[in-house]
Each structure stands twice: as C-alpha cells, then as structure tokens.
Image 1 (tube, rainbow, N blue to C red):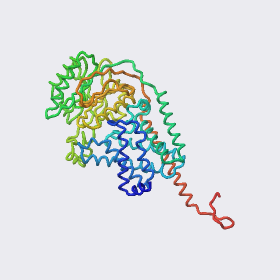
Image 2: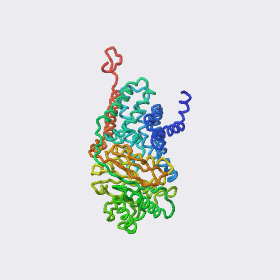
Image 3: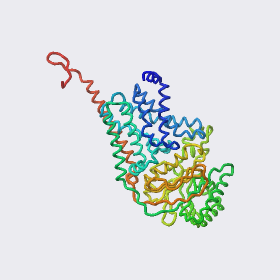
Image 4: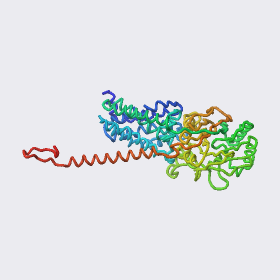
Length: 521
C-alpha cells in the first residue's frame, strides 16, 4: 500500500489512474451490457477521490475521470471526429471536477456517521447535476446517462416509470457510495448498510405500488430495415430496396409501416415520382407509411430531417421536422469558431435546419403516433411530452450506419426501452442498418430485434396501453429534488464555516486567577 501511495503521489500517475477508473462504467452499457457492474463501477474512482491530498487534486481527479468516462462512452466517434473526440471528452469531463471535490469532502479522511449519511444523498445529487447540465442538446445530449445502463432490468424499468432514468442514476450512484464506504471506512458501516437497505426498500416499493400500464388493444406495426447501401447513388438504391421489402408486407395486416432515418434522400415535392410510388405502396400493403426525408426543402430554404406520413391518397400533410440536432454530426456549434472540425473528420459540411414543435400524427383507425428522429430518443422530456399530447405509440427513426461495427447501435436501441417504461407507451426503434427493436409499454422487448447484419421487413404485434405513469404526471422531479439537496447542503456548509470563523475570532477570557479560558467552559 505504501508503494502504491508513493506511486500515486505523482500527478501524472494519479491522472492516468483517474482516467482509467473513470472509464469503467461504460462496461455496464451495450455492447458489453454488464448492467450489474454499474453498482460498483464508480467505487475505484471514489476511492481515489477520497484519498486526494487536497480538494484541488480531487477536482483534477474528477476531471480526468470524467474525461475517461466521456472518451470511453463516445469512443465510436473517433473514426468520424478524430482528434476532436478528445477535445469534446476533455471539455465535458470538466463537469466532474466539482463532483471530485464533493466526494472528497463527504467521504475523505475519517468521516463521521452523519457525514457519510449525508454523502449517501449529496454525492448522487451531485452526479445528477452533472447529467442535467450535459443533457443540454448543445453539449451532446443525455447519451450515457448512468441510469440507462439498467434498460434490461425489470425493477429498473419500474423505477423509470416513477422517476425516469434520473431516479435510476441516483440510486446507482448511491449504491456505489455504500460499497465505497463499506470498503474503505469501517467505522461508518452502519449508515452504509442502512443506505443499502433503503435502496432495496425503494426498489421494492416501486415494484409493488407503481401503477402498471393497462393494455387493452393491439396494433401490428412493421419495420423496414434495408441494411447497408453505399455508393454515390445510394439514396436511389436504398429507396428501391426499401420499396422491395415493403411489398413483402402486402397481406400481413399491418396497421403502420415505418422506415428509418434518412430513408428518403430526396424532397418529395421535387420528386413526385417517388411520392407516387410511396402512395402505391400504401395502397398495396393497406397501411400508411412513415418515411424520413433527409433533403433540401423545395418549399423553404435549408436541409431538414422530416418524418412524413404517406397514406393511400398520398402525403397526409402530417410532417415532423427534427428539433434537436446532433452537434458536429448535423450542425457545427459556433461554426465560425469550430468550423475547423470539418477538416479533421466527418463533421457536418452544412448545418441542417431545426423544427419548431413536436407533432402527434393520426395514422388512421384511431392510432396516434409520436415520431422522434435519431438521438432525440435519448431525451426523456421529448417522449414524455408526446405521451402527454396523446400519442399511443412512440416512434424513433434512426440511422447508425456510420458506426456499424461499434457499440453505438446497441446503445441507441436500448434507450427505447427506457422511454417506453417512463411513459407507459410502446416504442418502436426503426433504423436503416440496425439495431431495430420494439418495446412494450413496460419497457420489455416485444418480438425479435434486427441486428446490424439484417435486411428485412418485420411485423410486430404491439400491446397498446392507456393511463399515465408517475413520471409523465410529475416530470423530472428527481432532478429538482437533487438540486434542492445540493442547495440545502451548500447553505448548511456555509453556515457551519461562518460559525467556525466566528468562533476562531472570539478572544480567550481570563478567570479570576488570570488563567485563559474559553467562554462557556
């Protein structure tokens, strides 16, 4: 241990270790999907932070750990953004610097039972504050939120229906705090064990008392996944392939057919021939078709990504323009300053235009659908608002073909399970090249998933549910509660420091025998 401590005395050694242990939580996400590892993945990082010699060093360890986490979580961006991936990871990693200081403050040294008990709430709240800040679309959105690692855990999905993915993040971090205390602070094991019991109690209560979606009907929805299509003429050949696969759905009684993101590479106003072919397909299959047009608009300037519904009589007029664009992938933030990213990677050469509002579409036969495009499925508030507006089914049209051989497709598809559980609405995740999947209103998978090696048209029978989950009703209450915890803790810390400062300024008094004594003794 002395040898290790001496080795860690080097700032560069500590920074390297911090980056490595900070990257460990990524193993809980797809593709490894070691969901159980999330419960202890932060422990090595916390143990390093609590032993930092100063608060400043703890902040640096937090920054380096955040850098490792962000780089590992987004490593699949390296072929597209190259060195800029490291810049993004370093900028986002700085969000964990205050958290590093906070962990040392609450768990460092020989903390009392009271400080550990407070740490069980304050440290997870600090983590949630980071997730809130980096969930801003301009910083890349809520990709890699720690609670999302629990997308395949039944109890976790039930908790998501109560407090969203944020409640899962809070409880996962709290579990890590408990384990870190049990490992390193023997004198404070009682509050740690109490924290474990409290977490188990909250999970059990959610499992028993959280309302379950009441399913009362079913709908048949088909996904069309054309697979990898490359080359200069890929938009036309992809359309031809999608048309061929869609024809296979004739006679299968589908109520809706969904194509993936950028499935149509031409504006339908400029290509009436394609609009006629889609209309004929809708008549032939007996189902409306939701396509995604990625093209320069003919009716207004700029390039949009738009979900467009086609019925047997042509476009229905329902259109959703993507609102939250992928930084660097679909636009360059502060292009005048960061435009050089286009010269070192595959960043957007031209900014796409943003939509202004979400849309719930009428797909016929009383079915109301709420479309999302690409990484918009990572934002809990967007799916929650669609559920509030009356959507029966949530639909995410996506394309991860650029990252085909990476962890990205699996990570993206897993988000649909959480959005379904949060809203109590089934969710369809349709892609061009996989992974495509469908989840029921409880977040459990419905039917087979289409992997990245599949090109197929697949029909899913999906249960419909009604009612409102606590998360849809009360929104992001977990985040507000975490911020309140941090404010209360901050106020008490300031008050304590002021009391200590006043006490140190009180001069000693002398007794009748001229011996110094403190007042009150």
